[in-house]
Amino acid sequence: MLKLNLPVFLGLLLVHSWNAVAGIAEAETRTWVATISVQKYDHLSEPMQLQFCDNDAQGFVERMRTSKQMAANQVIEFRSDAFLGSQRPTKASIEQELPAFLAKPNESDTVYVFVSMHGLQIPQLVQEGGSGTYLLPSDFNPDELKETTIDIQWLRDALQAGRART
Image (cartoon, rainbow, N blue to C red; front, side, top):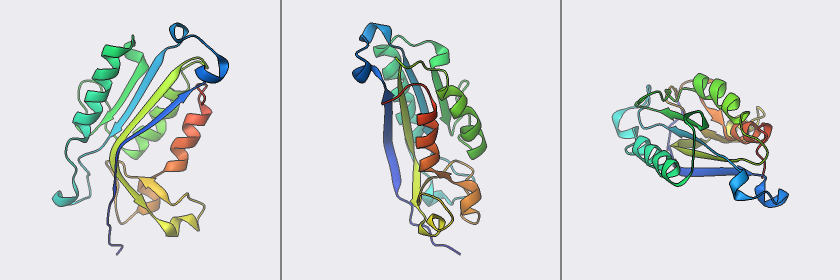
């Protein structure tokens, strides 16, 4: 069995925007926010659970909503507590819903992706074509590494596939 020493990606924030390159005025842009926070894991013991990830993500969304004019459909939240319309941050829900959400913004829009969860470097998966760095969704299972992690490259590719660009 693999012994896990889990580092934490707290507040990994990815921003994609074409605005600076295209010279588009701030007033013409919209802001989109995706948050993925996991503090409760289905297959990890209590000492491995995280605290405050959902609160951090919720605070980020609230801050963005007060500083930007954002419609409800411009936010997607994946949270352990599945609070008020948010979705559980399982591998399946993230991989299904996030790309569809990221396809909505226009080239002039800015997209913020806030991630607060465990991450793991798995060198043996590099040999199988992975990046070696993985996000751990709520249904992560240490006995099924490849099947229950999200390659960080997948997240980068999902951002690049959207119309908002850096």
